[in-house]
Length: 136
Image (cartoon, rainbow, N blue to C red; front, side, top):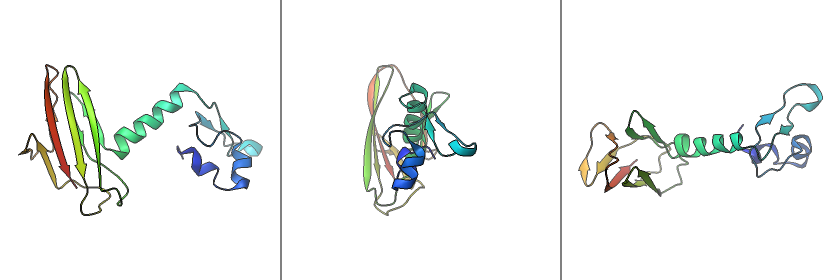
């Protein structure tokens, strides 16, 4: 629902949607003759939802109570991706590899070469460079 291109794949659906197919709308109307029409495009709140969907639900990067958790849910043809995350004065280089063409599920979580069984780490804001290697 959140991806605007899904509302404009055909000429008929684009005519109903009536807003830019490359901008996330804040609203999609559901009543009577306006059902399916987008509204409030270029609204900052709708952009933040796309950001959250990409970072949290696709790349799987989630921070809760100063703990970094990574649990990707990606297309199975993605072989790898990297993210550079800054927390305070610290930098986390996150490299996710997907050699088995999985959509989700973590096989290995390493911090600076050491396996982390909990598959999460406590973030340190006081400086340093940390390398996180994830294998799906």
